[in-house]
Image 1: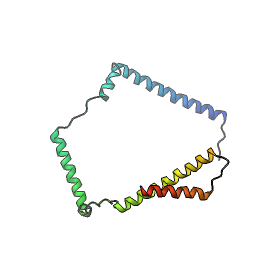
Image 2 (image 1 turned 45 degrees about the vertical axis):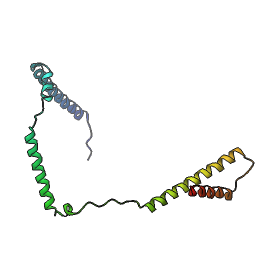
Image 3 (image 1 turned 180 degrees about the vertical axis):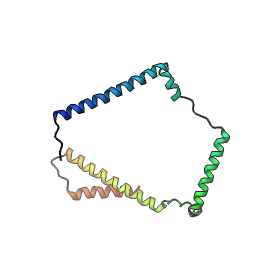
Image 4 (image 1 turned 60 degrees about the vertical axis):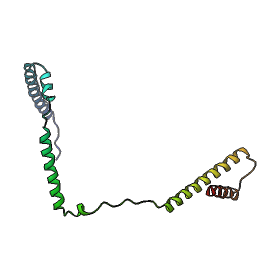
Amino acid sequence: MPTKLTHEILSAAIDGFEAQKERIDARIAELREQLAGLGSASATVTEATAPRRRLSAAARRRIAAAQRRRWAEARQQAGGAAAKQPARQKRRLSPEGRRRIIEATKKRWAMVRAQKAVAARKKSAPAKKASKTATRALAVKAAGQTGAA
């Protein structure tokens, strides 16, 4: 059931919020007085930038050793199977596979060059039309030249 906002309800809400505002303003004034009594804001800055506690080298070694022990226990509880397995050997490309990749790359670039040559000829001589068979012939010829080299 929706509440109808009447004049009395709204004025009571305003009075309540004003009372809260006065309490908040009073607290802010108290805090400002305390801050002024401390001297300056530099006191809070020095606390924040106090030097960090330093550990000795021996303490760092003890902490590191303890951590290594914890990790060793964790690995042991996990079954130790992961620690016993040798690292997987990297896959290597055979010389034959490398040769095939090089040949395929040369063939693709020959096709690109042939298509560029045909496009350049079309621009220079617009009256002549290059047929698809001529383009293919150029590509095959270019591929044959690179394969022999």
